[in-house]
Length: 80
Image 1 (cartoon, rainbow, N blue to C red):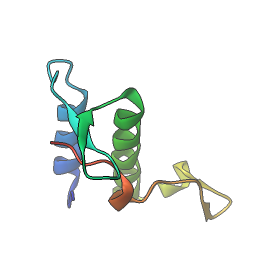
Image 2 (cartoon, one colour; image 1 turned 180 degrees about the horizontal axis):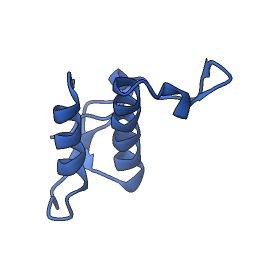
Image 3 (cartoon, one colour; image 1 turned 120 degrees about the vertical axis):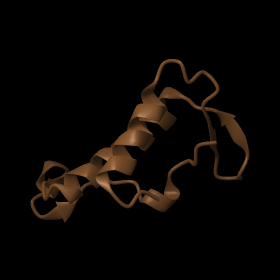
Image 4 (tube, rainbow, N blue to C red; image 1 turned 45 degrees about the horizontal axis):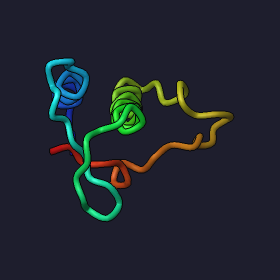
């Protein structure tokens, strides 16, 4: 889990680097599989929410003061 902006940005860069051809994530059963575009989107979105929170801009993803459909950080796939 990231604790600061630097760690979050470092993770985003790693996830999105086109040279990272062996990017794998775990599914709900704990088994690894090659990351799909959806996996990458979920990981990116989680990090973007984290950055928005750090910058005090949670309004970017909240609607009318309520949480939008936001994936819990613990429910996202883990990278290997």
